[in-house]
Length: 345
Ligand SMILES: NC(=O)C1=CN([C@@H]2O[C@H](COP(=O)(O)OP(=O)(O)OC[C@H]3O[C@@H](n4cnc5c(N)ncnc54)[C@H](O)[C@@H]3O)[C@@H](O)[C@H]2O)C=CC1
Ligand SMILES: CC(C)=CCC[C@@H](C)[C@H]1CC[C@H]2C3=C(CC[C@]12C)[C@@]1(C)CCC(=O)C[C@@H]1CC3
Image 1 (cartoon, rainbow, N blue to C red):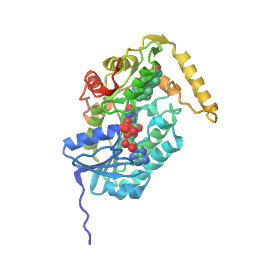
Image 2 (cartoon, protein in one colour):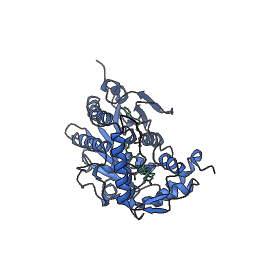
Image 3 (cartoon, rainbow, N blue to C red):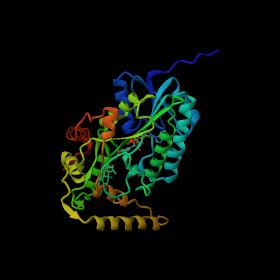
Image 4 (tube, rainbow, N blue to C red):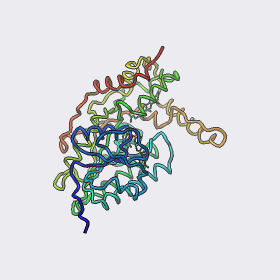
């Protein structure tokens, strides 16, 4: 009779491990003595101690070999919000997450840590120091976020102490750091096209930006604290830098660090939001004739012009979380890591 090897608690899988957050997580797990199995639709690097499994997480048969002899799974895969593809968000974030849960149960996984998002409670209006007990957004800012809400609900509901399957969700916000494919590249692209001259609103709105290593730290603390007797089972946790910053100060610091001029002129929020709405409608009406993607979408304007920052108190109390890298240090390290995006002039 074949004997089943007891999974080592130091062997884990990272679904989405080729991505921005996933790779930082893999690197820290290796530092901490874990061996890691990465499952991703693409392979973006090679590292000693990491086994790569390439496949789509919607395919359970492809997923199962990556979970063999593993006790802990991190699920941080998702299509990029910029892909703007409703069917893909639904297939990967909802149906795919159901498949991940089934595969984990079949493989005898004990712990599943999901990367959710603090935006699951954001409706485009101010949130100040929001706690985890805020209700899920009834009108999420976009379809991507709608599927992140469903994904989080599925994972938290699957937590079953009797059956020894424990789950927890981490809700980061505005992740930035070296190798980020989104925040700094979008910002620099906007600046290079001469569109970073304006501040939307009075520029005093506070937002959380979270250095990637703090997000990683929150995930690992959650995984290591996830036990049948711990209060964290089946709960979501905000993980931020715990240093809300003016959205426009953050953008300006990154821009200036890379040699670009910061935005200076103010535009009223309602005007820009109205224009973004109009552009979005036009892009839909004109889609059969000409396809274009506006830089200023209503969602982006809401992200740039409202307060949205979150309390980390629950993570501090239950996980012992405190950020390990300050915002100042995080911005300095990020700016340094993008020499190719510096202003040439
Ligand atoms: N970047 C941010 O500011 C924030 C990100 N998040 C969440 O953090 C997680 C990681 O995000 P990032 O690292 O920024 O994104 P990313 O796009 O760099 O990484 C996502 C990874 O998932 C993989 N993937 C996508 N579809 C897949 C599929 N069907 N099967 C297997 N792998 C698949 C991609 O290939 C990619 O490597 C995501 O769940 C995202 O929703 C939450 C809040 C903020
Ligand atoms: C706070 C948060 C959740 C950040 C996530 C990343 C992106 C949504 C932002 C990264 C760069 C941002 C940006 C804008 C909107 C939000 C981002 C895309 C603008 C398009 C807002 C309007 C402008 O004036 C230009 C900005 C460029 C950078």
